[in-house]
Length: 342
Image (cartoon, rainbow, N blue to C red):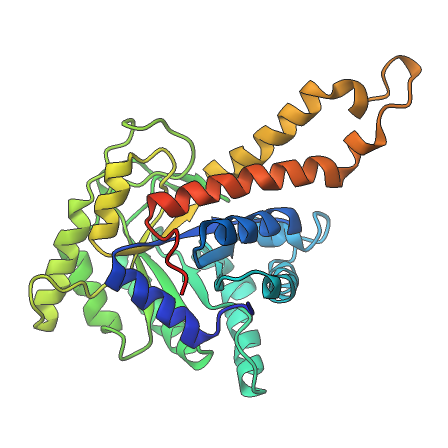
């Protein structure tokens, strides 16, 4: 299917919230990992979200070029073409963008989508993330207001972060302290600043102990009940019933999370969960196995010629893509989106 239109993406998110499931949002940095993500979603019978970070966008432009906008647009153009051959809906997203990269990443991409929409097309990306976790909440929400207006004009959804995700991803680092836990007051401030959809749709990454990177289950204290408390505070502010879920929530830093923690987060309104570390490992682990177990064919050992079929990048790349796709199916199953494509 073609990359999701704004209407299809909105329907995807609505169905996720109504059906109490969430979509894995898979970070990619190459055509191989993009193809692996597409296959994983198709194998799971799930719609999905594929995203690039600032570092991924840099890399996609060419490691000696390092142009995030060029890399992002090249990725989007490729994705728009190859996604047509898969029977699921895919939305494209850009991940964590801090304040110092807004002018070289999100704002130019929003402008490019606005021009495309004015010409009768669809946006290059269906959503963009503004990561204001490193600035005071008031400034975070002021910038979010500006970006939300730009996103609405481009028919794009904005993602924001309220609170701090610990650990490090692409140079964005958060301390592991009490700021890992968003408060009901944070939720109310967000609703007051951005509204409840009337000013443009947005996704909200509230934090409940999340940490980017690699950790074993149990090493980080996740508190999914914080998400419910935020939803209830926002609902009260909006005059809604206590069981309402005003926020479309995003789960960052989920690697190593326990199944029951993921399930509770989805029950409390998470519709998107970022998956990066686990899929990176699945992809690279298969390459390592290929190289180590087949080293005699990959290398020209003792003056021999090796085996071209083993060192052909398509051979080990295909194996790595398959392993990553399997991990994505697992993510879809854990988030309950497997089999929900309609």
